[in-house]
Image 1 (cartoon, rainbow, N blue to C red):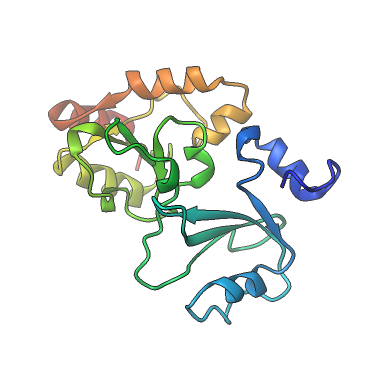
Image 2 (image 1 turned 90 degrees about the horizontal axis):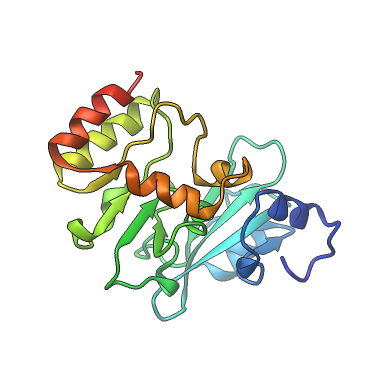
Amino acid sequence: IGSLPKDHFVRIYYEGRKIPGSFMDKVFFAEDFKKWAQSVCQIDYSNLGKNEPRMVIPFFNENGKLIAAQGRALGQNELRYITVKVHENNPKIYGLDRWKSDKHTYIVEGPIDSMFVPNCLAVAGGDLASYKGEKKNTTLIFDNEPRNKEIIKRMYDVIEKDYNIVIWPNELQLKDVNDMIVSGMSKAKVQTIISTNTFSKLEALTKLSYYKKC
């Protein structure tokens, strides 16, 4: 992204989402996402849309090897996100190349959200509990969707599995971490909201009963 002209529509999108400048050399642009995916993946992605430009966020493992990538649509598209894997058995986990396993780990749904939270991994729309780290040193952060029955179900599931979980305050109307940043919140403010709204076990169940609206 950093090599694109400042008036390029992808760079304008990137900067509009207030993504940290430190990721400008770690996020890319593909004029034809299908063609790019076919060139790096061992899986057949011939069913992807043709000649479709997307912003590309590559996923690397702990050794810096490409394992997957997410393509973000930049216009009107039913599939806003497409995540492809280089090999079938690769995990769709973003951030492993900068993750410190000995520190408290945060897990979010979207790669962009993870760029604003320290030592954070993203599971690209998958099951947040698929991460198998030490539960007491892990906090799961779902999108703020109290009317989404599927997300509420997942939240109950991870509480039963003894994970720490963020249950957003009712007055917060923004959907995810990136939306909070775009609205003008600082990373420090977002981190404070996360820290003060992290719960587990019975307290988490009680908070979730007040949070859900579905």
